[in-house]
Image 1 (cartoon, rainbow, N blue to C red):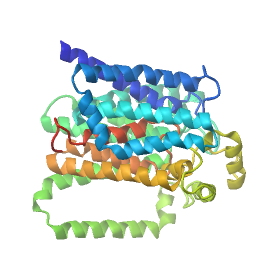
Image 2 (image 1 turned 60 degrees about the horizontal axis):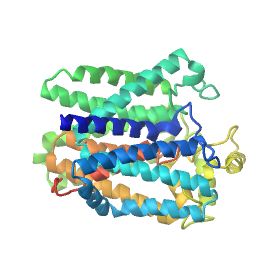
Image 3 (image 1 turned 135 degrees about the horizontal axis):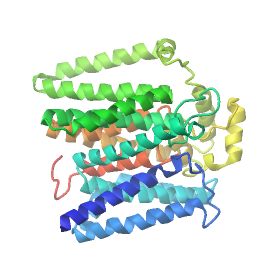
Image 4 (image 1 turned 90 degrees about the horizontal axis):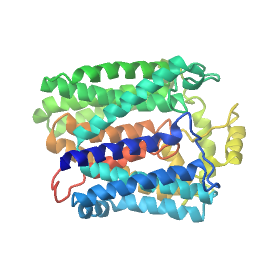
Length: 419
C-alpha cells in the first residue's frame, strides 16, 4: 500500500510538472506574462511550481532517497552552473523581472525533472508520455475541428493549419512528431512482448500522423522523418551489431557525411519537397540580424529569457526583417541561448547536451534493447527540433525538462552503478 501511495505521488508530480512545463505555450495563456505584477499570471505560475516541489522533496525523504538526489546533482554540476548563470544574468539583463521569472521557472523545472529522472525508468517515462500525448491529441483535435478559430492558425500564409492547444502550428507539429515516435516505440516493444497494449499505441500513433499532417509544418514533417529514421537505425543496429567492426562504422559515417553534403548542395530541391525555399520561410534573414544583436554582448548575453518579452525589441526585429507581424522567438533554440546568455551560456548548454548524448549512448550500448535507445531518442529530438524552432525554455520548459530527465536517468548512482 505504501509503494502504491508513492507511485500515486509520482503520477501527480509528473502530471503537474508536464502541465506547468507546457503552460505558457498553450493558446489560452500569454506567452510573455507581465512580470511587473506580483499577483499576475507569471508569479502565480511560479507559486504553482512551488507547490509541487515540496511534494517531490517529501517523497524523496520518505523513500530515503534525498541524499542520493543531492549526489546526482553533484554529478551534474554543469547543469547547476547553467542555472546559476541564468540567475546571475538578471543583474545585466535588459529586463530584470523577466529574467528572474524565467530563471525560477528553469530552476523548478530542473528540480522536478531531476526527481523524475532519478525515480522513473524508461518504461515509466514512456507511460507518462503516452498519457500526455493522449490528452494533448484529444484536446488538440477537438479544438482544431470543433473550435477552428482557436485550434487553427487564422492568419496568412498558414490559414487553417492546426495548432491545437498550442500557440503555433510548429510547436504542435514538433511535439506531435516526438510523440509519434514514442507511440511507435511502445507499439513495437508491446508487439515483441506479445501483449495487447500495442492496440492503443497504434490508435494514438495514427492520430499523431493526422496531427502532424494537418499542422502543415515542414519542421514537423522533417522531425517526423528524422525520428522514425532514428528508430529504424536503432532496430537495424540491434540486429547486426554483433557482426559490425570498426571499418563498418567508418563506412556508415562516410555515407552519412556524403548524404549531408548532397543535401547541403541541393537545398533548393530538398526544401522544394516540403514546399519551402532555402531561406526557411525567412528564418535565414531573421537569424543574421539576431546574430548581429547577440554580438553586441557576445560573452554573457542580454539576460536569460528577457529580450523577446520586450515589445520594442520584437518591433525592431520585425522592421529589420521586413515581416508583416512581429517574430516572437528566434526560431532556433541555440541562437536564442546565445542571445540570452552569450558564448559562455551557449558553451555550457552545448556541454549539457554533449553529456546527455554520451551517457545516453553508453546507456543504449550497455543494455542493447530498443527501450534503452529511448533516452538517446529524446536527446536526438531536442537537438533537431531546435534547429528551426526555439524549444529551449523559450515559450515553455517541456523540452528542457526532458533533457534534464535524460541526464539524471542515465547518471550512475549507488542504486544504479552502471548504465
